[in-house]
Length: 408
Image (cartoon, rainbow, N blue to C red):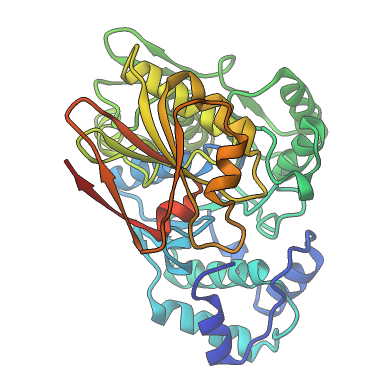
């Protein structure tokens, strides 16, 4: 479900298929009719189970601080499709989207694409017309057969690999790695984050076949922590403060810097440090009120990263979780990762056709202090005292669809 897409489809009388159909033939044909707008862009292509959004946010912030203009195509939406296509940190305007739809209508592409393929084409058209210096393209799902995999990037990035979207990508790490590694291109560098040795070995084989220079976190580049953090890779940079918390964000930042260096982009150390100090990505351990955080931990790997962040930021403390998730996710696996740092769980149902009910979530949770609350309005009231910390987590669709009010 891509919010606001139907409005544009109706206005321009363009039909598209809402189902998921992995493959590149349809979108390659469509883009050719439009003059292959993606080929005019300097692209960094980003795949991974978790960490894609944060890594892109780091790269985008660093580049903009260094004076470059940026464009982004990401998934899913925080509010609607406009924030999936961004220019210099600003959402695409309705006028930009309308111009792209007009071009698609003129090219006679109605009924030729799925919804996500259509949105991908819209993104390429918007980005071409506005011509930012660098563009970050995030895969929608997987990589090998994802509609974004029509690009010829400066660098390919694989942030992490874990079990997610198993109904489409496969139920083993090996199957999912095959999809993620599918974005590696001939003689184009590839940068990868922390992952199982099985995935690393498979990526090494693909990179070798593609004659792609491979950079691996912890081997070719890393961030060391002493008094300050120091990046060591193709160059060395230091900074004093990082706003995005947690050990996983340290990895994401390292991947971001190495990818920019692999793209042969010149970076100033002071400007990079300022970007690291200021960068925040919505719903990634985002503090919206003192001791109240939003974090879109929607699978076991993301929940583990959230738990590690809590353990680092609040050693020895327990927190109150408010959670809503989609049914198709690994509900029990995600909740199990959070139990060691939980004081309580509050489960809720939110307005999404695939949302699990609060009762379904509670049945999956092996923790004594838990409850279900009804949530029918657009806002959630969070009750807290001075001693408590609340973390609202689970689906990004939950975090995007609600406002949060705090009461003492």
